[in-house]
Image 1 (spheres, rainbow, N blue to C red):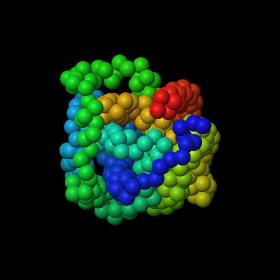
Image 2 (image 1 turned 45 degrees about the vertical axis):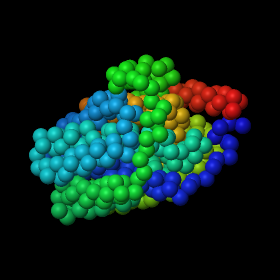
Image 3 (image 1 turned 60 degrees about the vertical axis):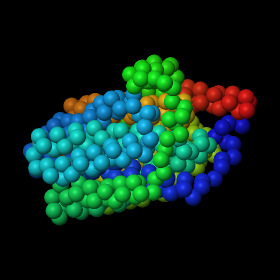
Length: 416
């Protein structure tokens, strides 16, 4: 019997509350990142920027998040995770406020960099907390619920953001994120307990020594390499999906929120079910199924022409469910790689690698994709091929990680 198939304990009341808080916190972080994509159809003409410049806006956030995660890695396991989370979440809120106040390409680029600096560490700290507080047998369900933040941002945040953008300008959604984030921060400050058990496990290493230890451990390197490819295709695809939907698929800008809303609703329903399934039948099994679904649906999606909105919603929903299956199962699997004393450092570096590789992918997407005189995107199918190729490679790499995790868990059980 594999570790995934063993009976899993239940959640305590406090654990349920923590999962809800982390999911809501992730909602604000992900919405801040994702909202820039559907706003692309408005931002590009209003600020008179090219797809390549818009790709730089997206990638600047990613590069900043990656750099800050690397810089914080040596210190990530030396502090109470609650205090670290509060500090960087406050910085994230400040950066988002700057985005709300931006009215030029240069200022927006600067604001996205500031936001990314803090958001990168917030994301890695959330996953370190998840790993600290929940056993491996429960992490599929936890990741399933936390990852529904992606879907919730689509079903609630993005449609509301687009509505505010259509009514008061593209800056308005960022003001909304600031307000919601302040409320989340207040709840976290008041009710989240200190998370410092890892401090008793931390060896007496300097920050630089701790960083070097993490980046030189062979099994960690295997996880980092896999993480580097996980988001490559997504970063190339998602920034341009709104423009592709409007100008290539023929979806009216006013109906775009409906596409995101229904797609997100399907993902919200599927996320927790996918998490439970990954704990029940095996995380790699679910990851493999998600990879297959992603490859099929992205190939279909990127080859569509003018398409009825119902079919666009169906294809998009199946695509996002496939992507969610990959991310939920992969997050749970990768969480088992680092030792308890290295979790913060590992998650920071892993998040940084993901952001940096995603940043390069967004830049590459801007180079591959071009715009016709009518606003339609050309060569979007090439982006789809890249996503399929990266998905195949990560499937092979994740197979070896799964074998390593299962072997380690079996040995641990035998010793116990």
